[in-house]
Length: 212
Length: 212
DNA sequence: TCTCTTTTGAGAGTCACTTTCAATTGACGT
DNA sequence: ACGTCAATTGAAAGTGACTCTCAAAAGAGA
Image (cartoon, rainbow over all chains, first blue to last red; front, side):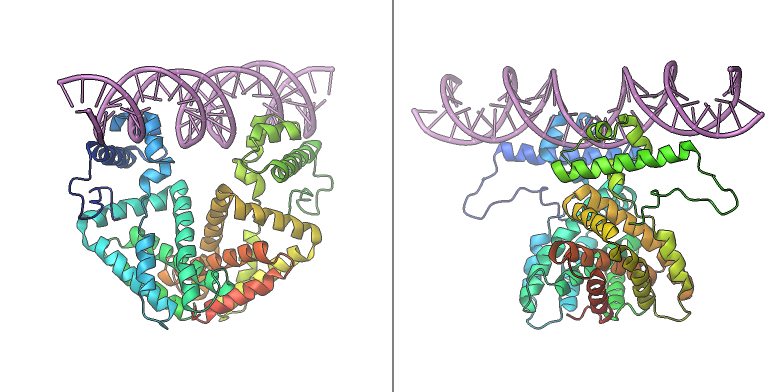
């Protein structure tokens, strides 16, 4: 996960100290809440951890928690690489089969995360929550669905279709379902292995027409 | 939807009036709650309809509603054809490709529903709720996922694999995601058309390796 | 009709939010 | 350093989906 709130953005290179105390505190608070939540979730479980408890642990008021995260689930989810993936996808060569494009984009975006031990550990922890907590699993599905719609639009224009063509929707639905399944397989069976290898195997099964 | 609580089961043909007043009342209450809920959902929307309101409309106490339906979402969802589909799948000829088996099972189980105007109308209404209400969509996903696991087990044994083999999981994940997507396409684009045709088209896309 | 068991309703409690409002606290110009 | 303005925060009350407990109501069976 590209925890892009670890370091506040420098905006650009024109203004030097564009980060006031206010911004820094916001980042701190956000991190404090998330850290407290992950700690408590690991110790007591997600459902057994009220938001009030998280607030107390992070030394803020409950209302502040909801100001930073619209729902309790959002404390866990951070998926903000959609735009990144969209740009990568747009950058793939013309005429490349969509399935190949998606595969390459996944390699590009995931290898960075998986190679950094800290990010990888956080990802494993999050995917365990995805596996174990229905509410979080549901949100993940929704999030995947939105990402699918975004990438579907790009694939549609690259293949001369409309975004809501059945082919496009079937394509993205299948691909994202399979990525999710491969990830679940990874986190519950082989978190030491290479997730990208599992995803490749899974996409190959898809590409062979599910002829198992 | 096979509203199998419309008529209480006769248990078998040995005991004649095996349905006491108690059983009949339970069925009535269950139906009253569901009818009230559907009516209110159609009129005011799902989120704007508190369970207390449904209880009042159905003339029962709120606690009774929760006794009949563990959650508000469950008032909408009834998916109980899992075992039926499982039996159908087990009945398919040996050696038939899994994707074909699933296709045939879908035809068998869906055509009955779609050909009955009342059941078809209810299905359209439910799928609209699935499309519009995140909570219901989430539950539907969960339900699909469970059905997938069930059918995956059968497919695994039919193809000489274990139920948690990656191939099997990828297969069911992709198939169910695609069925869901085809259903959403149907309900929002062409509820007059034949859902089974859309599902066939979608499964064919899958079978062609998603080579769009 | 008299038990026994199941079903129901009432009431209190928990937890995830939402909204409102007043107090606090950085940002910024002087 | 100081005062003003806008953003941030906390307190408090409210809503709605559940959960739990317990006593009243009502069907089942003798």
